[in-house]
Amino acid sequence: MDDRVACTMVDFMQMKAFAESPLVLTEGRGIRVRDVGGRWYVDGLSGTFCAGLGHGNAGLAEAGAAQLGRLAMACPTLATNDRALELVDVLLGLLPDRYSVIKLLSGGSEATESAMKIARQFHKQTGQAGKFKILSHYRSYHGGTGHAVAASGWPAWRAPYEPLAGGFIHLHTPDPFRPPFDGPPWAMTPEAVGAAYLRLVEETIELEDPRTIAALITEPVFTSAGVVVPPAGYLAGLRELCDRHGILLIFDEIITAFGRVGAMFAAELFGVWPDILCLGKGMSGGYAPLSAVVISRTIADAFWGEPHDLIQFHSGHTYGSNPVACAIGLAAVGQIRAGRLDERAQALGDRLQAGLRNLQAGVPGIGDVRGRGLLVGVELVADPATRERFPAALEVGLRVRDVARREGLLLRASHWMIVLAPPLTIAEGEVDEVLDIVGRALDEVLVGATGAATSVG
Ligand code: PLP
Image (cartoon, rainbow, N blue to C red; front, side, top):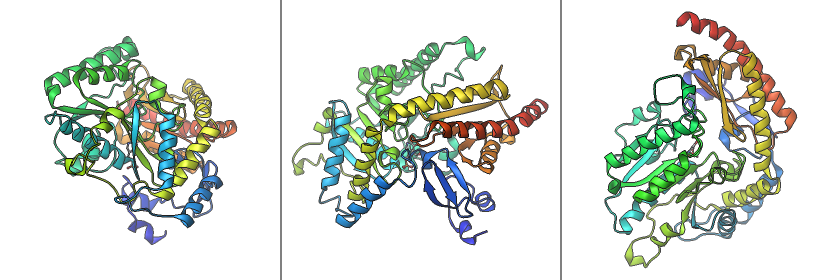
């Protein structure tokens, strides 16, 4: 083993376990990445949901190289740059007219963090200083920085850093696979589940006092919660509640935008537009750190004034609007549009989901296959009839991940889920290759685990 691996802290993972079975990547081509030992894997997760345009993409590399030789850095506190202006123009052209200003940043957490700050500052500058609370969902993920962690909703990612910033209130994840009431899960239609969760949101707003609530931030598809697609009407219901109570609606589309869910934006897919839209990951195809906060005209107007008014946004980051990142972003968005990769993600995502559902018929333990476009999750259950999960100690999802890696596929897993989000450029035959490996991995792990689960239970 390379001793340096133990000196590198990888995200979220236990270093000891990683050092015992490290993955050190050296190059990538198309949907595949190669490790230091020369083994190739299908990148079933597109980096982390960002390399939608595949690896070794010459157009993106050239766009970056050309800009590096032209202007690599423009001081973000004194200037903007031509590439940033072009990118803002392209993005606004893709979005409805209600948006007028974009803040370019370098990571998803910077975007969500800034969105929440903008929401609070907006209310302070429009005579509603009492509005400061932020609503978000349990099991969501909005990033690793202070407010982003406070808004995120998995205890394991929050507890080590408590006490977190105050004023963050959590709502229940609107999970149609796991309705909130007793009784057989299929007894409630998804619409009834959505309506039930909306009633809880409404009650929370009333109990917290809407005059104290600045914003509600939500992923339109809850990836970290287990690729939970909210029931029909849920997002529209949030929009209505926010409008009624003067609460700004923020969509965290760090994962879902730029074709991933079969549309350029999940907002477009669900027909619900927020007041503030956070973009990242796929915007640069993963070739540069790049993110954006898209702000509605009404909000932006509250930040326009004289220097002595002190109503400008008092925050920023060194790599915000970076010209190299913006040049790559322009090339990436151009490729997504020219290749109609949103439509492609829809078609190939349907193929992936259909293939996984076929597996469901033959492999015990596949409880649910869900997602949109090429963002797909498989929930693993010990008993499909009751939807009871496997005991966490069996780590079935993690074992599926490990077998898939052994067989040449990288995917994301928790003990009860596996998640697939391959590059949007994946070919039909490659989808089938992914399905073949996933099928074998599920078979190897679940056939044993369902027996073990029965004996444990
Ligand atoms: N929001 C969502 C939905 C994410 O999945 C992530 C990262 O995975 C973030 C925000 C934070 O983005 P970053 O890791 O680029 O800071």
